[in-house]
Image 1 (cartoon, rainbow, N blue to C red):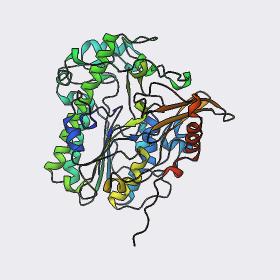
Image 2: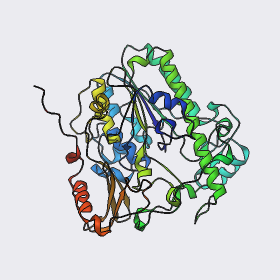
Image 3: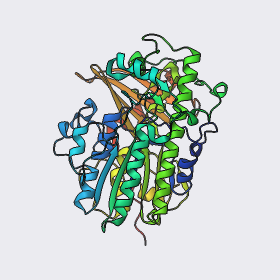
Image 4: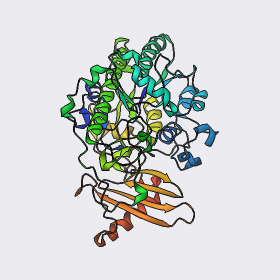
Length: 453
């Protein structure tokens, strides 16, 4: 099992239909496996999304949405890596897989590896950036950097080198392996070797198609993107200038292409070692990311662009490939999926649905809905994504009173530009989607196929 995690990667890739972003290696992986066109995280923030995926619990369970360590909130959690280790796998984690270091102390065969190097703070290499980072809180200097250096000069390049070494070691073992490799980019700051910036002419970088929040959106649904505002040169209030926005988008694209190159080298080494035909390769991102969309940046909302993620599974001999499916998928589905693909028993606590049947028949009827949520002070926003709609209820934590609703119809409004929840003609639709939200994930599971004659 080669388990590749990418931080803050939205499905803006060639294999997802984007004509600008250069992602040839991820595209190649997609051409060999199953691409999930509509996959969703359970919460658009690093810790909760990763803890949910790795534990098999949805964030409601044990209040994982509070963003503490998984084993701090759910000390008895039986994680995916523990499960594979129990069944004889050599389990290895490199880079960012979990969010909290304490979660890496359980269920791994060797100590977790995190990159070390000569950079300053969050991976700054240029002198000016290092000096700025040294004076900023948490070592956060500029929001981007383009040093003319090799891939291995930045942290993710060090992670890749360690992964290549581990593959050599794992090949020699007489046991199966679960190798988790977590790349940080394109997470802020957008630092990548200059040659990846050079892939994109600066004057060809587009800005977001919609730079205003959805019409009729309640204030609690929006975010002030404080994560980006902590970086030098970004205004503490108000919008960024078009010039800065274009540089930020440029940096994000560069980081995507940098990560894509590292993934290509990793998959190529798997092939060179003769391991590719017996190894399941999974590529996933923890959540999406706004690039000025709706006039906002970062994640931290229940919107489609925050919750939709790239998901690709290549499992030789286990389903149709290459294939694409529009069946709704959730990151919490990965744990049961990988158990089934590996022939391991499925733990009873899992709250996802194995995607293995969908990989064999990508066009079959599938689950009715995918669920996400995001907390605000005193309020919880719970969102359901169906074939056509995204519906969200914002309820008070105390008393459960609904304070706002959102409804976006992607058939008539592909950008999700207008919240139509309060329009008179939507009353029946809102009632139906509210019932779906209340019924939860168990009621949304795909129907079991009829028994064969």
